[in-house]
Image (cartoon, rainbow, N blue to C red; front, side, top):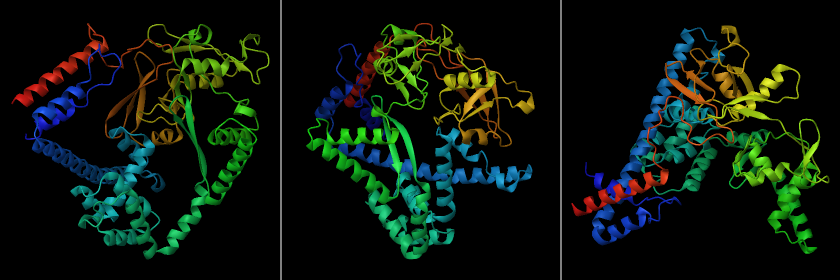
Length: 485
């Protein structure tokens, strides 16, 4: 194959930025020097040609995935109808199967299936452009999104007007593609576009997602008038405080003011339960083992200690750390894990009702939805083997799921059962006979390097830095051989 040498050389330029590389310089520098010395300009042009060809293939494969997704959807709906499923339940679980196959979350799987249906059944020109590499999957998604308010016939008409497969959108960026689709949709059916804008108010919401360094993004989707009003109020307050000598930046003041106005408490700390999980060594002995904050993820040990030590009370209620002037109270609930694999085996509970304690246990163990690739918050605590099939209400047979995944697993053909593993493990079966394994995430303090279920540890594991160093030597050898040839 003509592109092998170019791909290998390009791969060698990636190198490694690991801090534990035994004093060796990254391969990227050596490869770059070698290319400058021994590779002609024609060779560099060939590498660019191969990169472009691979991009075209990615687009063509995305189009092929769309066609296969629509075919799978039709087959599954036919099978569900033959099985006697009610008409309003046809299609349940199909997007979840596609998501598992594509290693995506169920929500993302639903969007991908909707994109595939629109491209295959209503927008043939856009699909052809995607197959030919004239559009990538994201820009095809933009065209579908901006015509979602139209009927199927009108969407076909917009697709024909834009005719992306004719090269009309060649060189167009995202904003140009969106603008062209919006203009075509408005010319064809202005009422639907206006109604879409009017109905968008119903989609207003607030969301939270993690950001690096124990920060987060709090996002509000608001009508433009409300958003401008909020921004103006925060800006006026920031300007007033800055003129009064406040040393904080305008952005810092606006962020602090937003938190204080919403929570009614300076700093935003209020009487809520956040379920911060850390080891006793991190809490009491200054250990560096990271902690876990449900709904966010991993946080540093220093941040976790500072979040709870202003005032800490033991299970008996006596203060054990922190100044008496702290504005809130922290409580400790002990979690007990197995020494070898970190599996959660017991925990303290203040509730007397067993179901409540069991839900707390499952929440602490699973953290997020147990469906592979889905990291949505746990909303339902469900039986792995259903109660109607003899499943017990026990820790082993319990799992945390988001609402969408819990509904998907009720479709015909889905099933699951617990499996042995280093931590709580379950096997998920889909209607097509495929199986996927889900293992509970490790709690803070779990020994590093624990194997996944079904994996086998090598008898002689070399340190990671040694393996990286050997990989670099191998890359250098291959590069020099390619240049010498």
